[in-house]
Image 1 (cartoon, rainbow, N blue to C red):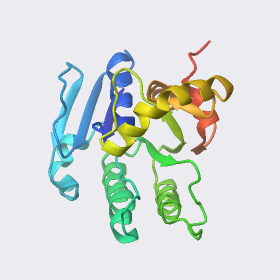
Image 2 (image 1 turned 120 degrees about the vertical axis):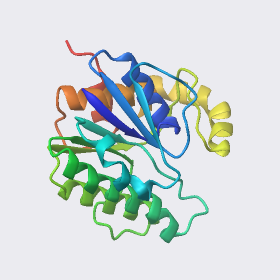
Image 3 (image 1 turned 45 degrees about the horizontal axis):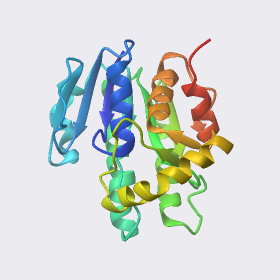
Image 4 (image 1 turned 135 degrees about the vertical axis):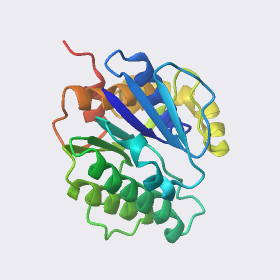
Length: 224
């Protein structure tokens, strides 16, 4: 299968890209982003554009794909609702509307967050915006769309966050996360599991449109 990946430089995206490049079922990955990636691979192609609003200019390169894994986003910390919505709603919805026109049989997977508000009316700003994005994506005529509501994630294989504060947290918090994962294995995912679950959702299907951490953990398990 051929996959478009948004956000390959972020923590989740790095993990997803690694699993895509390792999986023999994935034949080609087009990474879309504002910066070049540090690695080269025979499966990997890059579309680098400083402004993702310019995607319609690259229609010929965005056609013929089976799936899109959208992990691009920004933290809500210190952000106004207007700015947060621009990155976490406007950009993914614009990209999805273009892709569904070019690839009507595409499966679209969007990285959301645990606690996302599907009503769009709650008090938490980021949860409202993510809920609005989920709802809008599920209304588009993709072959299928799945929302990955990811909570705690343990980075593996050298994966790091682009946010310095998060990296400080992981330096201190990883030992605790490893302990907690022994007791709550379905609540604390790894970047490896997230990538494998996305691939499995495309290859084997997923039971729900909205997937919480236990659902993602189950999808990531090897097929019997």
